[in-house]
Length: 228
Image (cartoon, one colour):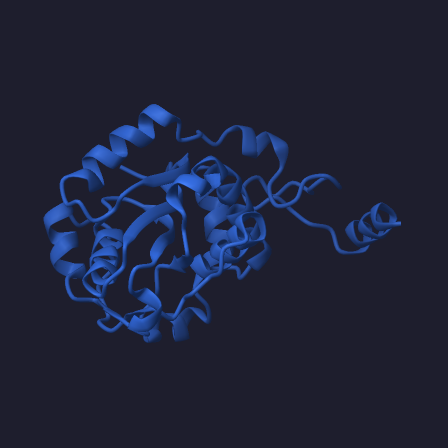
């Protein structure tokens, strides 16, 4: 019955791949199989190297996972942009479920209490209308069954886009951009920060620092994609 309903909906309201714009088949949820196969996965060696480069020296983030390697003007960028700019919220849920599956092997070891999407400044959120990382976190919750707590960290300083900045500039740009809220929920708890794309890790590290300063036990991080 559900297959018939889905087929009927696809006939009257066809769905299209955000990358190649071809009509999706019934079993294709967000992106077509051909475009999905073109996205490079972030393998264990790449993740270990990224953790070493971006997080190990600061001692803020205790562990890190990402699904894919980000490439400009490629399929994954189109998929993420369909969430951020076309309000395809189902894309965020889909990506979050994939990320949740990726994190299952770490779930017992990390003992996460709360998932926290990296917050947007209220002006940016008003401009966009939503926080894309919240939908990714919601998808993760469906797989990991861990509560999502978007309100424990607030972005209080409007920052310039990090695009084009080097690591030092990114750290300076994001410095003191977050504050901790509801400290009674933070103390001795372990958090998993979620973002769509992590480049230098400066934003994640600054957000993690705020949680640790407020009494968090540990902070882990994850993203849909990792970029150079």
